Image (cartoon, rainbow, N blue to C red; front, side, top):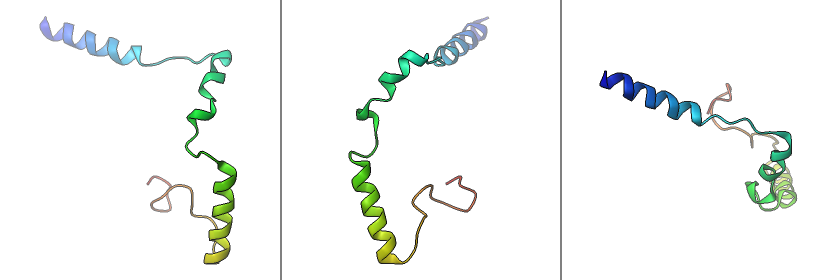
Length: 70
């Protein structure tokens, strides 16, 4: 009986972590503070400079093998 209570508590904890975001709530999640890069234009200029200097382009997305899982 004790294990059933523990199981139910774990189930309720995992279910409570799921949330549906309404369209009017998404504007808070799109805040500029949530961006990884402070200045995306400056990042693009830097990547363009590196591509010209190295003579190659691409490879700045996901890291790892060709499957894109790394």
